[in-house]
Length: 512
Image (cartoon, rainbow, N blue to C red; front, side):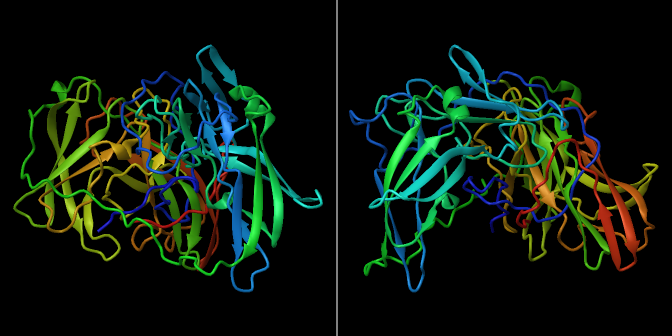
């Protein structure tokens, strides 16, 4: 059974796994901007038709689209959605945009990295790490009269699934496959490999128009065009649009992919050399907590719900393997270690996995990853969440600019496997630069307010609470988020002070 989906922005290929809930407090020190070695993971190979490099096409960085697009009116609809298949094509050098914020009180700052030096985008150009806001403007005119019909703008993400557009282009792309939008992320990388293209918009990029013929002029916003070195020709596309009646031979079938999962290896014990904590050398993970977010009250105000994220700021993935033991609903857990070349160097026992039989889970959870506690104003414990076990997964890119961050963790052989009841072993992973978000929206996973007085409290997100996992530092394992509870029993309210300049987006989906 599939564990859950990841938490990418709407432009990313997988949906969020967490629900609408919480929001946050004091902040652990943020990771400083630093260099990053390009990883070698392969992007999905090009399988569909790629843009032609005809003589009329620009050969440097440029915007691309088909020359024409058509939408159809089905049934009694008066408007149709006409797709804008926009792609960004990189020339002879990769295109990279690095974004960071030094604290939550500072705007996000972004630079385009070029061979001749960094080119800064205006401060605040990125409102979040979910992509480039208002990347292109669109002007639609009537093809017959030239009358302006509508104008629009579209956000973009340079981290779509890429395709090579030239046979001599590199065979692989190292860049992420989506733009990620955890409100408390601190750094991102967007990139297009040299000689590759990436889609800029998806379903929300369509234009709704009535029956007729139109001309759409799409232009990259000047601030982006200047930073990316685009000429007026390279930054502009003209597309003929048509809205027609429903065709008679349209296909209503869903051709979507139903996905898949890893199979257990069948092994019954760890491999490699068992290490004492003092013997671990080389890179190790570093777990950090983000402030709780998406905070709300539910069930007549009796319960406080929130989302919580623990991420890995270290220079190595957190890799925890489980192996079945004499207890059928338990697995012994071992943390594995790797050198700078990715070779396994040893392991250490770190607790256990347990099988969760609840209908909403039906998979294995690691018991020693995090805990959530509601603290009183004096920081004494008021309530401890019953959520104690986790299936680790890379749901949120928190900072892909940390050293050795994995830009494409789903493409490595260190993929997360939540397992099934008959699994003999499994592996769960939190890659460097990534976080695992859980939403406290299921029964037993939120704070019960019924016996608590009104007042000021703090939601504490605590990573590695029993200190069983080996990491480079435990000084940044706790994050607090201030909340103020008021109202009458059965109608409680919560007020959550904002953290710096962060504006939270609570429109998220549920997960496991």
